[in-house]
Image (cartoon, rainbow, N blue to C red; front, side, top):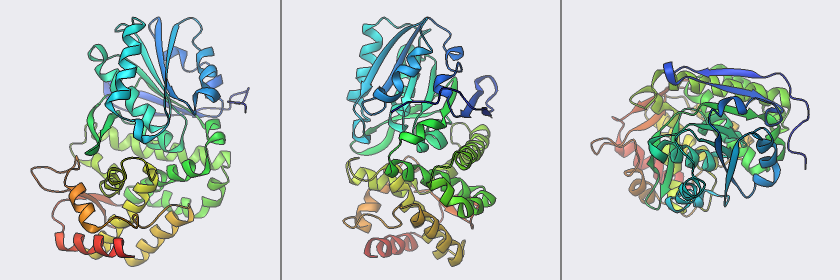
Length: 369
């Protein structure tokens, strides 16, 4: 299968405004065949990190842009279960064996797992080297590649070991979505829907009206959805880079979702699937607390289910399972659980004073549905 179109289409650019650490997000078809990536590799060496699924399709196109560099590669196994310290060490080992120095550039070519691990390796190798995000999944393009969150998982919790570390650039080739399996594509839609729920009610309505075109992977609709998602995330990240306040709203559904992933040992549901169910649970708690209407909950569930995503947690999870895992979440401060909730569609907020009895009831109802 061809990896990219031979002629790139016009590029849309979004800026993540972080002062001296600002960087562009370039969005367009054919970016892996264009001359956009080499300009961000300033040194003589680069290390591309990818996985066994992506490497046969896109690796050579990326290497072709870097013919004047020493380019080494690390090809990891594909899957959330491989996002761990053991595989992170494979990246370090290749960097050391190939004598990469502080001017080397790491390039993440793949989905969220590859991006998170490559970013963390870049943040920590020789106390920090440049890196570039080249996301090839919808979820990574609209969420994990933007904002500088890097991490690996631990058996006791997801993304508990990591750092905030911004890339030099994010290069999004929308053509890569043509090779993405349907399940992965739908999982990415969860993060797209998230932006409508937390900050952009107009975008949520657009998603309701244009979902069919998106699911058919219409190039115009996809480019718009990716751009709008990146604009929303860039605005939040620019206001709160290290999640001291408003950035936490980007975690809508994630505390519930991470609990699902941890419970399953990172080998069951995809991240976006877990987040989808988590967003419904967050909306249910928002309705129970009187902050969101039942009609808005119904619209949320309908859009998620229309994407083929789960609106209920796994059948084998109990409310006790959720509570035991949620207390390990990164958003727990001084022993107090914080959750991202909704004051209606388009209005996310971080709440710590919700009624725990309501949470228990929502969890019980969701797990028995």
